[in-house]
Length: 114
Length: 116
Image (cartoon, each protein chain N blue to C red):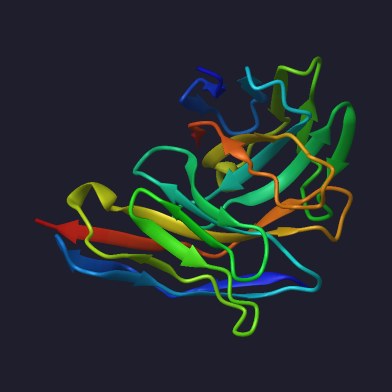
């Protein structure tokens, strides 16, 4: 079945460091790929998405490129801030059923220190 | 602002006492979802409504039920909460475009359920 694998956390960085969170997927067909962010005690917010191969999603300085050849969608940011501390979930849309259901990775907790 | 609203943000119930969580949306989206998220885990889909059509995930326990009286509201009913049902419950909505591309799901802030 379809699945998402994320690098395990927690990830601890200093402010202004470069961030990469790896995400790979297994899917039949052509899923859409997403990164969601969850701040402490809150729901999930869409960070960015890509719907086809070679698409790059970007938002708030974060980027991820849909790589079909490596089945990857790694999240990157050039210079993290303390306010980026959160849990990041990689996800794909599974169209195996009647409706696109999200399949999430396990999440990667990011802590950014001043 | 259009949004997904969940009330209450925190709910305490007793073991075995029925509880209802509510979700409302001002986005006018066709699809509403309920997810369960336990501590340090990914959200797990319980079920969803596509308009009035109810779609249950195969591994969702019978203890969990849902109602959608109209487009804007959706309820999660837990008939006999157990200690293992303590979790964050997330409501989400989406509006299928019919293109087969990934429609974004918009999440509410969640309701954290505590079972005593």
